[in-house]
Image (cartoon, rainbow, N blue to C red; front, side, top):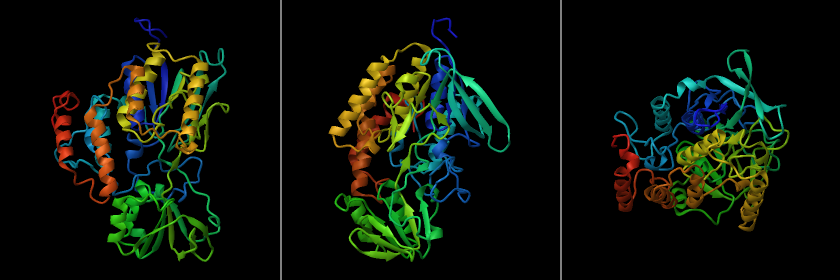
Length: 458
């Protein structure tokens, strides 16, 4: 369909009503498209919609379709200051009678998304309690041209199934749900409790237990600091003992029952956990804080898009599969960046490409770009599994240029870096204490157009 301005308007299906899906819906509507958002849960928020009841989930998350989407635990607080997290035109301000901390708990971020949804009137576009079971190409027209998509969904609590055809599909299902597990000798034979952090919620079940926590990433550190207060002993197993931060060292020296150990060599039926240095402990529980895999169990692209060692590809700029673009796209694949503004720039670009306002490069040019990107990562010694780890503000700004989105403000970048540096030094306290340099940056932030645009001041 072509609008009066000569731009085409599409009927688009967005999968997921988390941060990525919500901003996608908004940008699609702004660009004149018709969009429906299919959300498996009863409310918006995606990862940020806390689900305390995890009993029905496989403890290691081995089911193809997970029952529980969110991996958020009860005590989780965000790792970045709220000032940097908001969408570009909707600042994440503190509100009276809510969690006003600079690094609030997960509920406050969920409430921010609720506010965003209400302010922009997005709820009417969302179909809740609807699980997408299949997305595939319709045999239609020339391959790659006029491509349409069949989407089959099911009401979560009933038997009603719906089959629809869309001009385009945007996958916005997040990447912190499907547990990524290590391969450890004896893992299947170990008879005691093994869980992935995906189903960890509170420390109480581990009271007086000997617990081994595998992985010293953010969740591994967070959960160790919480469980150590109730457990008999906690053994934190790290990939490398050479790169332990000063902050983690301080925490370990403070707790007599928290111990740092190397990687696990093997597990034994009698409950023994053997480490690479030959030492052993008998544990009650192992918690795997080993990250997450990208998974799209509903998506059938006839093998065109795949996940190989946590690399989703081929994707041009982590967004478009060249031979299926622009009718299939992904939002929220990249990690290690300031999420919400980046998802917003992805949503703007996709919506504009679908309307014809922007053009993608040719198939050959997109494939060449992907090949060169893979090669540059390989030369830099970056593992395939870290393909989508960005950690580069320049890339975010370059990406924003595709849709003429604003670049990240300097104060946003500096506050982000400051929080990371502070966490390395003061792991337990960085969310509640910071230096004077942050106060100056905060003043810059609060006086910037980002915070004054809605006439709201924190």
